[in-house]
Structures are given as C-alpha cells and as structure tokens.
Length: 450
Image (cartoon, rainbow, N blue to C red; front, side, top):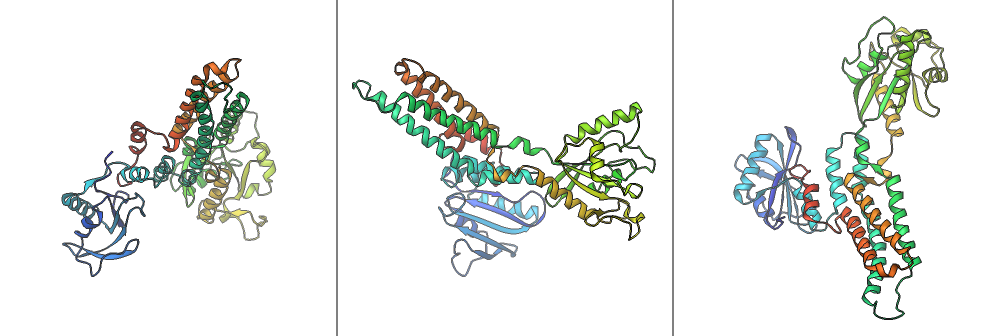
C-alpha cells in the first residue's frame, strides 16, 4: 500500500449541498492546493480557517491546512471547502489530479491514519460504521469503536498473554538447565484461564454490531376503530395503513417507518382489541401477541368512547409482559371538548387535524431509544472481532488443556504455539498483529474520501 504520494478525493456526501469538501493528504498537499487559489498575502498558518479565491473563476472558498504528524492521516493535509455544486467539485478534483495528485481509493485516508499510528483498526472501523449508521443506536455503537474501548481491552489482554508467553519461551530456551523454571503449571494455567474468562465476559456483554441494524419498534394497540391506522399514516407521513370508519379494518400487522430527530423507528399497527369468541378474532389476537414480543414500546390508543379505560386493563387484554415500556394517547381530540375528563399529562392527539402528532413522534422516539441498548456505554463487536475472539479462545483452551496433563513439559512447544496463535488473533483485532489481507478487507469497505 503506497503512502508516500499525495492523494485527493471529494470527501463530502454525493449530491448538491451548500458546501462541498475536497481533501488532500501527502507530501505535496500544500503546494498542490495553493495552485488552485489566487496568491495569498501570507503563508497559510496550520489548523486555521483561511478564506481563499479559486482560480480561474474567482469563486470564494475556504481552506484548512494541517502539518503532519498533527493531522488525521499523520501527513500534510489540506481541506478545500467550496460551494457544493457537483460539477465544481469534480472540476477542482480533476485539476488537482492533473497537477500531480492521485485519486484516492476507498478508505485510503483512514488507512494512512492507521499506518501512521493515528488510529488502530477498531477506531478506523468506527469511522466507517459512523458513516454507514442508519439509526441512533448504530451511531452510538460506532462511537464506542471510535472511542477506543475495544482497543484498550485488547491491549490489556495481549499484554497479559505476551507476559505469560515470554515466561514459557524463556523456559524453552533454558530447558537444558536443570531445575530452572520461570512459571509453574498452576500459574500458567490460571493466567490462561483468566484471559479466557475475559474473552467470554466481553462476548457476553458487548453490543453486536449486526443487531444494531434492526430499527427499534413501537406497536400501536387499542380498541377497534380508535384511529390507530390513521395515526400510523400521520406519524410515518405516508398512507401505509388502510383507513375506514368501519371497525376491524386492520386484520394483520402493518409496518411503516417513522423518521425522528433521534433516528428511524418502525411503527406497527395491529388489529383492535375485541371481546369475541369468533375464530377470526382469536387468530387476530394471537397475531397481536406475537407482534408485541417484537416491540420496544407500546402506544396505547384510546378514542372518546373508550376514554375511561385504564392503561393496565389495555395491557392485560393485549397480553403485554410486565415491565414493557408504554405510552397512553387519547386520539380524535377534535371530537373531545376542552373539559373532556382526560387526565393531565396524557397526550391528546388528532390524526385528522394533526394536533399533537409532532410531539407524539418525539415521545415515541424518546421511549424507543431509552429502551434500546445504550451502545456507547458498551464495547461494540462486529463479525470480524467475534471471529478473532472465538479463534483466540480455542487456542487458549488447547493450551490450558495441555498444561493440565502429567507430562505437560514435553508438550511445552505446542503450548507456546497455541499461545502465540491466540496472541496473533487478539492482536489482529486492533492491528497490533495484522496482514495485508485483513487491511484490504477492512479499508476496502470505506467510501472514497474517507
């Protein structure tokens, strides 16, 4: 992987915008960028915003200059901030490439940061994860990677394992010296078991990155004809559910995506609560109970004829588990007089007039994301991390089992080999021990300009 030349790329999201960014990294970043501007009155100071004029169109722009190693990549870096017109961005990038820069590949800026010791592999993966995040949970999980929590955990375990391995290898080197022992079987086995325990605890407590892709779910339940389908349409801003003044129109669960300031939420509607022994209603009730198990928050919807129903009665009739998060909403507020007997602190909304819809949208989001795992408070693991942890645990298990034998000294080199393999697997998580194939797989998933 060449890192001694100068690379350039559009680093802002694709499409028109108020501002676009072109980024350069490498030894010629500063002089190449300066060729794009009209002459400056003084040399640009690093790490400060500099107003510039682009040649030849005299377009006002701005630039940030960074001297390596005090930059993201550890090299000289320039960011050119210009109006986000796509043709203009492409024209400036083409001019930089014609002047001697090379078009950056996917993830090449982050890979240079890794190679120059500005971040480790997990922190680089956190950057890619933040870019690809589609909800607040994924963004918090990405932040956990970028904060270096997994990096610090890995350093502790590789350090402990390296210390044990050093004692084992010292014993191998001095095996011809009678009576020389650097570590006892019990201490070695206990140390290895301790690292195994740390791995098991991490895999149990960590947030699984793949699971964060699932959107948190809010399920609307309530009596038939309470207006749940209309609320679904209003909250999601789309006509996803069929609306009718006839009760029982909704038979099967219906889903729609709601966009909020905290992230996307899956809204689900289900059949209204009915007191009937009819086979159809029993089937609808069974479907509702299955959907409830998928929900993070229940939105209990009442309309004027059912205003006296208690939330506890609704939850019991729906078959909700104890402790589930819920909100109680009074719909069709346009039909309720100002003194309607609605308890204080209970939300009044109208799917017809839009009253309270924006507030309900944010209340559902607050409940959903409060119920969802706070990924930033835990270490986040992706599939690559878990595969490395599993492999390391297997090597350690073999080493510990061999030490438990009566003549384990005869197999000491096999024990050391398994310990070295476990160390390689753990080190590969953060790039302490890595190879070009791993690097290619990780940075190849990045977008251009990152």
